[in-house]
Length: 546
Image (cartoon, rainbow, N blue to C red):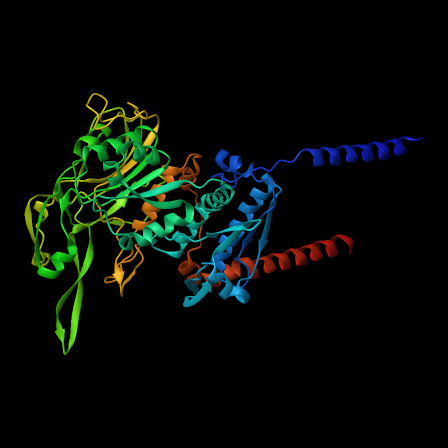
């Protein structure tokens, strides 16, 4: 056997060896600066639980604006990363044009976009949705954020940032065998269901939602506490009646036994409906008998109202033209429009939240970690109660010197080991479930009972995210849903909402103005260079060999 034959055989063996290595070892490398295609450990943990085929159908196929091709590409690349992590994941992109009615029936509403091409504006409709299915279970995933954004470029960036959280949240929900239990506490004059429909209907899509009558503690306190401790989250929305010591003790022991709580409380009686009806009202402190309970957890809700120059608007009748009443939208400083903490997953990418006659929260020093969630602007004024509020004050020009109270805290997240408020006190009743301290628990306290209140139009509840009179959009629903998700999140899934990416977008106006230059640079100039090179080469060749 000659040397050449040995070389060919060696090369063949080497190729076989490399092919064997390639089949056994598979590795993808993320070379992006922001590591956008690197899956988190939380994601990998959830994907490892997929033991049967999971189908993901994405309705981003067909003819739609070129800038949203980027969303299609990013979605495809992200899903390929999921499929590479677990081969039970099957991906399919479909054109929604011939199945629009079926998609709408499933809850996938189309999005209308304003498209700018060649300096002209036009409208386009897309279905930015995906469907995840396993056996007979399915969930839909919105690929466009509902947060209020300044431009479509910002909307596109937030959509790409949110891909991992959106898909993994849906996958986790479809894999969960036991839904978390959420209860709406009743018995103390809480907000009626119809005024919470917009918020609660979203909660019921993810969790098992029921009512829980806390006033049953009067007849059977031990059984009430036992039943309540099987609940994962209790929502307390705008109670108006004082809590008894038995009810407070039940809530306290629910918390020390690991129960999560979402408090939406008004410590001042102030009703917007009565103000609009009569033109003025008396705002006075409301005693819910919860001060000592919340104090033991590290917060205090003051009986003061906050006026904020950065406020939402209300629609008021300002006169008539003919037989038509004329309305005008005016800033109402008793409805603060507050921003969320941009560094926390509950409030990141959430629009401004509208509060109504909100109170201010003080935090107290203890071992509990306190994270501000909703904070006012610095241009605020504290209004002590009792006080008379007149609607005509809306026409008064605000004096900036009066609004120097600074940033006010309206919502706070508490995390840690909560001490029982009854640790060294006489118990209203005896229970074998009594604990002196909670271990690694969390709760959210919001100093406004109307933060979850939707409006009613023709007897039906409207969307919490929009005001029916002024058409303003707010982040109330997104904030509350994120709050519920965070309190019930045991896997750290919601931390994926903190993902930040840098998406480079094209300046359309600049590109349109300079299009002739760039067309010349990219099309004509290469042809000229190629022609000059060809002629020069021909001339030199002819000169050398003639």
